[in-house]
Amino acid sequence: MDPTAFRADLELIPRSLGELADALDAGLPGLARLAPLAEASSHASGAGAARVLVLGMGSSRYAADVVARRHRAAGANVAVELASAEQLPAPAPDLVVVAVSATGGSVEVLNAVERYRGTGRLVAITNRADSPLGERADVVVPLLAGTEASGIACRTFRATFAALDAVLHAIRPFDGPRFGAAALRRAAQAAEHLFESSAAWLDPLAELLAGPSGAWMLAPVERLSSSQQAALMLREVPRVGAFASETGDWSHVDVYLTKTQDYRALVFAGSAWDAQALEWMASRGSRFAAVGRPLPGAELVVRHPGDDEPEVAVLSEVLVAELVAARLLSRPIGRKEVAPGA
Image (cartoon, rainbow, N blue to C red):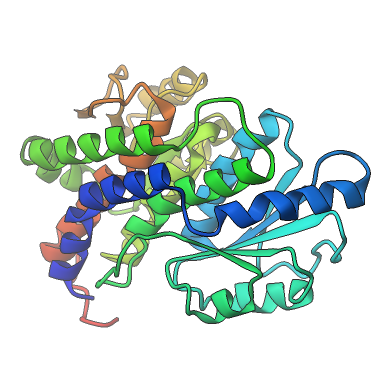
């Protein structure tokens, strides 16, 4: 892996978000074709609303889970599944399938969509319209994230929120806060702030998270993608141990390790269950930093504009971990160097 390429990909995030915001204002290609498709599916079901199945892997699924949860809360019938699953719904006249793959070449996604190919209700969200996924789909909606030279999904991860939100809204209008153009522009400003402020927090945060037992990421379920993507970036880029939890669930699945490990955590603040997790950490001498707001006992607190807005936070806050990942790749702390291409 080229540390310079990954850092360069990250530095393009503000511009990429701004350009995607402009594209949303103009209307993403493919969206206009979704309303008739959704209407046909609704008539077929006889229930007035199409069922939607979203398929993806890795970062694509992380983002999809967050977006779909919002639409379900507003009454939409939308489910997210790993494309690697064997037990998937059968093709049906009332089922719209949305396959998400940044490259359009994920083998699991391509395998999953074969059963829905030719149904007239297969939608692809991808960064490459000419990809194998794009060729199989009835409708293609582009991510417009540009080429990620490092091969790491950072800009495409963020673009997935906006593109999938737009697709689901076109299928069933969503009356609530969205990952629209305004949110993307505020997130671009937040990313710029994090780059500018990183000189004050990046090195001490990297030192904190480079623990001998790895690092743990906590986030509220509404922004669970932040902990998942943050942990993935530490595993994929500098190849260090990193693990993701939902903040409330943490007290049922990860709390045990605070008793036996040199426990280091990054807490994406804002869960109703923050205090419960922090009480356990404090009682066992765990070390942690907070993103988004001050938390009692945090060794570091990283803030950014709009960190009290969930739509902005979920698009911005993971940059903190991405910058740590780039820092640990370029200058490892207390660990062996990662061999190029390993």
